[in-house]
Image 1 (cartoon, helix red, strand yellow):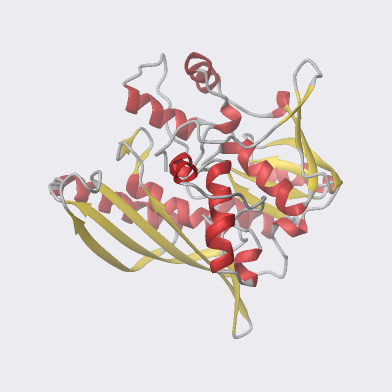
Image 2 (spheres, rainbow, N blue to C red):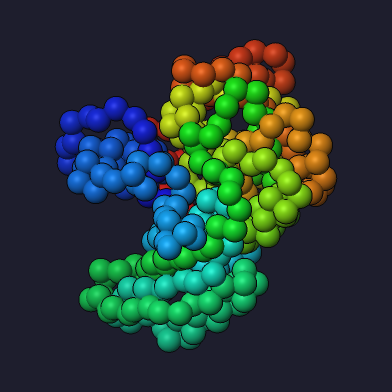
Length: 343
C-alpha cells in the first residue's frame, strides 16, 4: 500500500507517536500521516486514498506509485529485498488497475555490505522485473556509514498505463459489493518471522511474494466490474479492510470460515500468539465487485480465490467478522504492527 493512503482523525503528534509508528503498519502511522503529510502535500490525487496516484496525461491515464523497503532479514524463503522491491511497487500499480511498465530503483548501501549480497539482490530484482513485464529504467545509489543503514534499503517508484475506463478506487465501493481474495493469507509475514527468530516448523513457510498485475488484468479482460482493489501488505487483511471501510464510509462484513489460511501458517500463528488476519502478505489482494459477478471472478482467479464477505451498508465505517460459531466482533486496525520490518 502506498504510504499516504489513509483517512482517520488528526491527533496531537508527539515523539512517542513517531516511535509507535515505526513499523509503518498501524493506526499510529496513519495518524502521523494524516496530521503532517496530508495537510502539507494536499492535492486531489493524494486525497483519493489509493495505492497509487492516478493521473491524466494528455488524454491517457497513468498510475504512479513509490515505496521503500527495509525488510530484515534481507533474504527469506520465497524471496529477498530485491524481489520485494520490484513486486511491491508493481502490485501498487496493479491495484490502480494499471498495466505496470517502468520502475526506478534507489539503493541506500551501508558501508561494509558484502558485494556478493548486493549482486544477488540485483539479480533477483532483474528476474522479478522480467517476470512482471517491467523495466528498471533509472536509479540512484548512496552509501551511509557503517552501522547507519542496516545493510541495504531500496526505494522503487513505478509508472503504469490504465487501459480501461473503470474507476477503481475506494470511493467506488458500494453496498452489496462482494469481497474476493486471491489466495491464502499470512505466508510472507510468517516466512520473515521464522527466519528472523530461527524457528523451525514441520513444513517450510515460503513468502507469497509475487506480482499480481496479471490476475488483476485478467479480471478486467473478463469484463468483471471491479470497484476497488487493495493489496494486503503491512497490517494484512484486517488493516486493508479497515482502510477501505473508513475511506469509502461503508460497513464491511466478512465470514471467518471463508478466510483462507493454510494449516502451517495458522499453526505458526497460534504458537507465536499472532492473528493471521493482521499478518503481512506480498502477493495477495482483495477485490470489491458486484455480487452477481462472483462466480466468474472466482473462475478467472483460480482455485485459491475465495469470496470472504460483502459490503452491507453506508456510513458506519466498520468492519465486522462473523466467527465460525456465529458470533460477531469488530475488526479494528492495530495501534502498532504485529511484525515490524517485514517489507
